[in-house]
Amino acid sequence: MSRQLAFTPVSGRGTVYSFTVMHQRDVAGFEEDAPFINIVVELEEQQRLLMVSNLPSAERERVRVGAPGEVCFENRGDGVVIPQFKLVRA
Image (cartoon, rainbow, N blue to C red):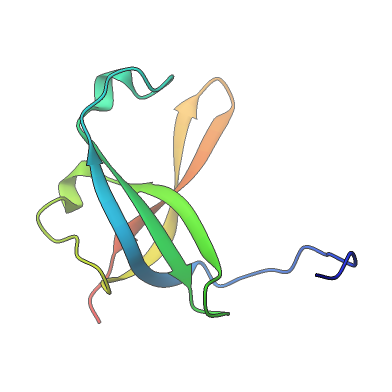
């Protein structure tokens, strides 16, 4: 409950904590990507340090809770770069 917060670099590695497949086409910027996979990743630096992201559709068949992953960055154009995760071998 501290008010003394600071940014700290992290490794970009973690494990899939939860995921869902989104079929809705009303998420701005992702209309053409549906269905897409939303994931919650627990970063390795701290238990319950969670990050919400998406997973490239090519990873759909491999995704599972507990799967290891690492961040990658996708250029969506117009200066927008989003972090997303790709699965890695344990």
